[in-house]
Length: 460
Image (cartoon, rainbow, N blue to C red; front, side):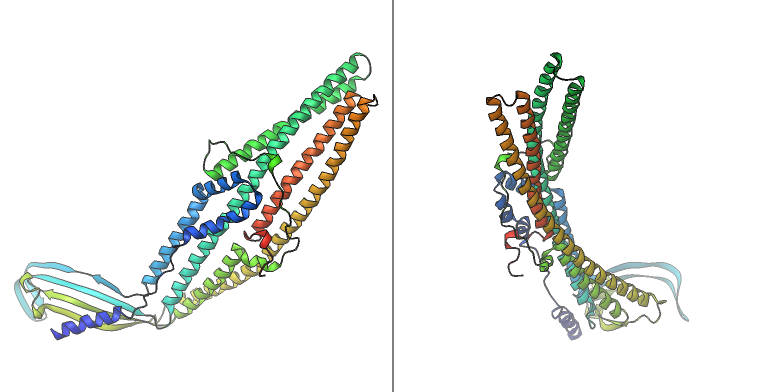
């Protein structure tokens, strides 16, 4: 019986010193995703409707839900790998009956009419001694993959919120452009009507009338394209919000504000905040672990194993002292020949590591390029908006001047209509440039990895 307790103690010694490391869980996952949403940044646009849409996006979008599921999947993969660092205990029972046979031979000994029951009920335990740290490296690899999944989720948040907001402002632009286009069409109809009146009394030619009709047709065609674009944007936003039938509430163009004091120079170290840079860096570490694991696969494995239980031929003797089963030992394992498989696998992992290095350096270059292009696009959009404001101001002055001329008889009503139409066409350009300026700010926010642009150069 003492031997039985010695074996139990051996099993405890196997289990207790095992590395019981806890898996990094995501108890603060909800808090992290709210940080990814970065509502503090979107507050600068002073649009409560937009903020409400972003909250709906957070709750309803399927890409976000899938990204969260990918986190949970990788958490379970880490847990599965952690299990390889711990001992295992299993029950492998064996109950059978040797059926009666006329003859049962054991060498020269013959037993006639042989039959018997077999009851073998052991607990089996084993533990792979991580002498070379191979299993620990595999767990580190799994943790890196979980980290990559977290960063991929962050990338989804940055991309979705940025793309949604850009389309939201494009929708506001479409509303305003359609309203202006309606006014342009109405003015053109008045111009056509007055030109036809002039033609009837012989003050203009047929060409003038036809040209005005052609211009009216082109204005109507342009409005149709604007309405088509508006419908496309509406459907895109509905898909983002997972609400295919719902009307998209939005702010009016007149209430839109431009963000000022956006930095015109950005330190290139900001790319270290981008999810793709962090992912490529983590993938480099993960691939390095792969190479080290492949090297350790060339070394022998050592497994501690043991069994305790009962082994009897009758049920009533299962718990007798003589039926006790116990064994323990260490099993070394080493592949003497594998056809070069392990060496090929090692070389394969080394190539993957070199590829990861190249991807890391390429990611740096691509990220710097995207940040620089985003900054240049913002500067250009801002300059274009300022120029369109100046041009619109000039057109307003010309229009007001025509009104004054009309009062003193120096300009006709038709001249005034032409002037108002030219003013509206420039106003369309000003609307487009203003929204483009807002969208360039959003693109720059996306390019720097979702960092508040007003804090862009802090602590860099």
